[in-house]
Every structure is written in structure tokens, then in C-alpha cells.
Length: 596
Image (cartoon, rainbow, N blue to C red; front, side, top):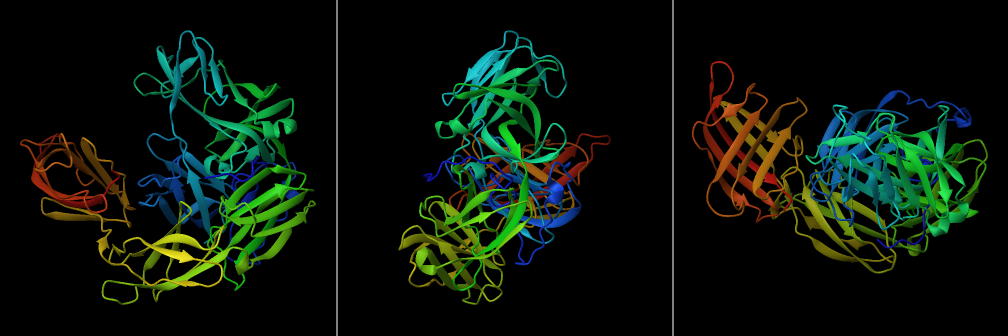
């Protein structure tokens, strides 16, 4: 996406502007925000455990959806759908420092920290960082790995250990590294945490970043490595020209602590020309930041008819330093709340999406050392808002009572639930009128959905688009019997792990009762005709490993032709490897959506 402002984050945008200030969301306009006076130079308190909801979209470095990514908040784990969307409801979270984390092979972990109010939704757009090997060094001699963007890591001789065992490592060290640009317009989607930190003296701070880095070390066999105790590595980053004048001669270093969900101060970096360089004792995410105090604010973004504006982009910046800014998104109720620098003049702009250079709404406000409520912020329809409404019906033409609409606009997806009568209403920002969007309707009861359809929307009238969720099925399941006893898993009630079939098709599933199942089959070409040999089958109902005395073949009935779905079945006799070599008669049928 094309940036329209360089961005330097300096706050704790907790939920919505998760890289600048510290935003949370809530559905009530009169939500009581805490008094901020107790936050000045005090220790951080994670707060009590409350129940909350987290939703969002996960994309790769090119802004394409990542399906099948593992997402965890509290004790609940789910996976993203084909649009990269995830939803976790009614999960227990620490009120002041809840964390949602995303894991996908080939990427650094995506982590967002936020505050949560009981029963309220938090929305994120999370952009994962590719875990690319930037270079290698020899553990005995050390050396330097550098990226073209100026990130460099220098290792001392003999300073590497196996992270798991603590034993000294000898051999090639693979260095995966990524520089996180502090002036990137999508920084709030990329960076971990929310720019809150715990200073070296234990006090609770907001942070202003001048650059971040993600670094991971692995050995020749893929084992995770770390810097040895008593050893150091030197980490250096380039300071972008647009913020070089603001960069202090020395700056604290902060690492991201996954245990607290906050940045933790450890060490100092020194400025040499247009670079910062400092020693670090381990690797995770590192941040070059100055710290400050903050107060809370809140407000609600609405259209001219009083509808809350969901997932619109909001920007806040210091008036005397417009480069010190960050972006985030409103929740389903249009609500934003959080923390901003104390005793400062701020400029708030609502642009809807990153591509829109002209704000739909702007205002200036001044903070002191007490909290501030901004109230309702109304965006006039003629300044860049467009509406869509319609009815979702099922295959019989009846209103779909459990349905949603996926809208694609400017390369991003938006998800809107219909009401019990199948009616949906969307109010969305557009940079130019008219604009083109793509809609698909999904009926969660029948697991049917419509083909994509394009519509033209504008600021002068509401576009009416009735949609029939029919013609395609999103049904996914795995059903199996073990010695005549049946077990069933169904998506999305149960967690279906991502599947990327190539030479091997490996699948696993779990549910809230901690029941597990999985299997793998192989072939020279998964998409070719003919049965495929089963490699293994496992289920938590069987408390021993299984072997197949004779080949078990998987017969595929769908092979990716219809919306990347694989379906099939197999059956056979399996022997347990434990005492007694118990025999199991197993049959299985499955239908799973994959990433091709």
C-alpha cells in the first residue's frame, strides 16, 4: 500500500492505533476510562482477568491474506480462514496487557498487546514479517550479517549456544533478520506489542520508536540458537532521514518480553551519524526508543446518520512533530480509547484507509495530566463515505439468519455480520467516488456461499445489493470410527490446522475438549489420479502409536478443484505398538480446505 505520511510511533495505541498511542475499544459511549494520574512514574500492573473478544485479519508482507495461520488469545487457539480472518470470543485475558499472537511457518510471530473490557471486541490488522535468512556466520569465529537497508548484527567468537539445552554450539549460524522501519505507514500492523514498556527502574512508560529489528538464530539442523551467557552481539540500525533531527545522541534499548506482552528496557544504543548501535545479550524483537508519560482519551467515530464506523483508519500525531504519528482501526462499535502523550497538543485525523491522503475528519486537542473524552466524531456522507445494504438469502430464497458478508476494498477485506433477518448494513470510507468493491455472502448454517460480485459505490446514495449465499460449500469435517465408536470434528467449531499439500498431505484437528486427530498421506503428485498411501493416523482416543500391517490407501473424491478443497476416505486395520499389540479397525472420511 502507498504511504501518505511517514510515521514514527511514540505511544501505546493499545488496541486501535496499536503502534502509537494505547487504544482500546468499547461499545458504550460513556465508558469510564481510568484516571491517569496514577500512571505517572509507577510500576505496571497487569490488572484482573476479564473476558473479552478479539477479531482481525492476518496478511503476509505483500498484504495478501494468510489462511490457516494459528492465532491464540488467552487459552483459546483458532486458525484464520481463506480471507485471513480470525475470531476469538469469550476468552480470559489480563485486563491491562492482553496478547493475541499469530504463528505461521516461514514468518516471525505476530504479536499485539491491548487492554480489554469485559465482553468487548478488539480488532486488529496484523501483517506478518517473513523469516528470511539474511546471512550466516561461523560460531567459532563470529562475524557480521548486514542487510541492504542498514540493519547489521555482529557476533563475538564462540558466543552461541543451543537455546534449548544451553550447550555451546559449534558450526554455521543462520541469521534471520528484518528491519522494522519506524516511518512505515503500516507500522501498526507489523510491529509487536503496543509500544508500552517497563523501564529499567520498573516504571510504566509509553515509547517513541526510532527503529526496530527482529532477529532469530538457527543451527545447521534448524535448532534454535541464542547468545551465550556473558557474551554480547552488536545490533545496528539506520535512522531514517525524516526523523534524524529528532534522534537523541544515545537511546535506551528495549526487547519485547512475551511473558508480559510489553517492551522491557535493557541497555543503551549510541548514535553514529545516521545509525544507532548497541549491544544486546539475546535475540527476540528489539526496539530503539525514548519514553514518556501519558493520559487516557476516548471517542466514537460515526457517520451522519448515527451508524458506528467499523474498522476505519485513525491517525494521531503531535502537532509540532507530524512525523511522530501512528495508525489504527476502530472496532465494530466505532469506539476508540487509549493513552496519548500528556501535556501535548495532538492532531487526530480519520482517513478510512491508508491510501486516502485527504482526511475525512480532523480535529486538534490538547492534553494536560487528566483524561480527555472527545465524544462523537461525525463524518459527513459527502466527504468520503459510501453505504451498502441488502438481504442475504439461503439456497431456498429464505432470509439467512446466521450469515455474514465479506467485502474486498482497496486490497483489504472487511467482514460484516447480517442480523437475524439476513439484513446487512455497511458504511465504509472511499478515497474517490465512485469506487468498486467486491462482495461475497456466507451462510454459516448451510455452509454455502455466493460467488464474488462487484458493485459500484459512491457518496451520493446507498448501494442496494441482495446476495444469495448458495452455489458453493465451505463445509469442512473429519469423521472417523475406531472399533465401531464414532468421533466427529466440524469447522469452525473445532480447530482445523492449516494444510499445504505438496508431496505430502498432513492434517490435524483439535477441539475444546482437547481431543486430537491427524493423518498424512503421500504420493509423487497429490493432484494425480489414483489412491494415495496413508503414512500414519493418530487420535487422542488411542493411547499408543500405530503401525499398519498392510498398506492403507486414501481415495480422494475432491482434489482441490473446488475452492481448494480436498475430500476423501480410507479404512484399514492398525496395530498398537504398546503391550498386547491391540488391534484397531479404523475408517475415516474428511473434507478439508487447503492452501495450494
